[in-house]
Length: 384
Image (cartoon, rainbow, N blue to C red; front, top):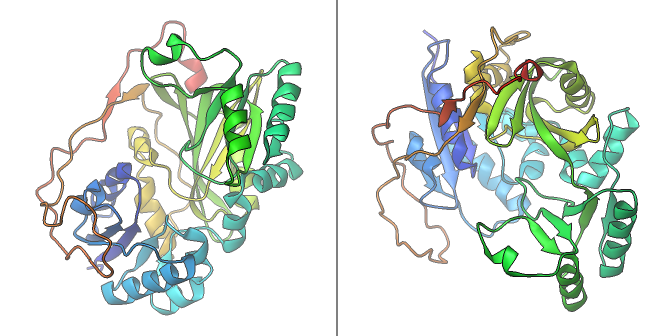
């Protein structure tokens, strides 16, 4: 009987409770033990794991890599899925391998290319993948010049950090003066150009932003599974247009995603995002980690997390074609249990405070938070 597989996820997104669910419900019916660490004692991934610990705060990337290696040795981890300090961790792949741990992560070179969005855009453009026009700015004058250039070309300008993930720091530039319009409804991403310029002139903190056109929907997020031989085993696009989500195998999206994943060593799970600039798809972002929405591929009959773990263990799953494309759906939130509040609610700055290993509480009714939608009138073919 195959041995139990021990998998560790470090400081990952809350949505990856579904990643963990899929590992346990793997089609090989193999026992999986999941270890999770996080900086937030109320992270749902800690409660969903079989064992969990709080991570020490304030470690440098190099010190974190040492901490991670020690975790793998002490816990007998077979597969480590690093998110926090991924670059520092993958630089020590040989040491992890010597400890018996496979890293479910790309090559150090790939992580370095895609850590910085400007470097990424230059790299993928060099292999023929369309990218939006963009300018790197660090001062107020550079920002104004970039915005005026884009507006003169008929675009609405936006900016985002050159390094970052999850849409943090993304804003859309507007020249409309601040008014009560901004104080009604929910806060949005729009920000007045004059306010941004004033803030930049006042601050002593450095900024490093990319200014580019506001790209249009649909957004297509291609989940890829790529082997160490640079062959892509799986590529499925998840479409997003407002609340409506769907799936696509259209080569307009998949072909450039495969080129990026295989050509740049994005081994194991990656997520490559596109949006529309006029009537053509252009690259939006490249994530060198599993997407938070990866579990949604279960609606297509695909268990991508388990296929990735098998690949990391040297068990090649072969090329994976979804047996069907699920119907359009939307995403809703739902409750997940947390571990008992055994720690102070206010974080205490104390070194070495760790959450003891705890058993996971009884799982709530398994749901990926996905609900089907009715077909849109006159639509559907573009999702397939």
